[in-house]
Image 1 (cartoon, helix red, strand yellow):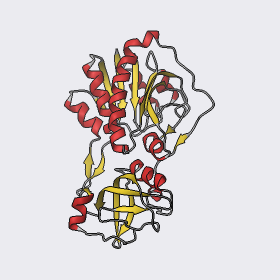
Image 2 (cartoon, one colour):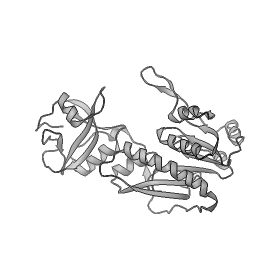
Image 3 (cartoon, helix red, strand yellow):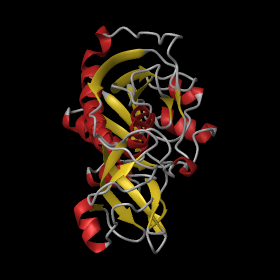
Image 4 (tube, one colour):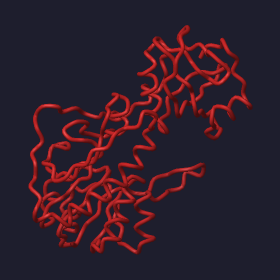
Length: 301
């Protein structure tokens, strides 16, 4: 098929690669514009931009798709279908209607649960046992379109957003290739009205750990916010991100360090801190972290 690909971050790259490998004709790749990054604040192309150029594909990065000029340019590509995954711009109706078979979105949740911006984070933070990938026919509403294909996967008890992100990206890549192969035989399944939830964008104000909360909630917060923005606490008076954890046995005052390996008491139960990062430093496993910065039993986080 003649495909317009629309995506921006790392999550989208395996999908683009899978479409190319499957032999589809990529008419153009749309992504977010380069933005200042790094210490020099020089414009840096997005992961999709960089990979598309390496594959020899045409790259377009308009700031908006609302103008008639951009919409005409999109239509002139004469695409069979557009594949959209974590693109980052609203698609106006003329864009949605332009390809012969419309626009398909790869969404990282089991719709209608977790429509919106941060479905992977929210699934972990809510304690969901499962999540998955949906291939959805796009329409004007926010992730409201009918689903063509879906695949579920269990969320590991110690899995972080970073780990689940990578698994779902690979699942999405395989599922969209299957969807395009089977497209004439797929029946769009309207989403039910019951069970709709919204995965609102993660706010940095959610990142501070409240040790008075139950251990299960703190553990999900840490894993759900890893690696970004990273749940944080104060250790020896300095802010430290906690990037991995597991539930553990133990009781104590909230925030109390219960042993020499960073087991910490919560409002109910305890967790082991497995991976940490001080400001300006790289992430370290707990044993390495403690060798450079001891935290004594009985200390309070």
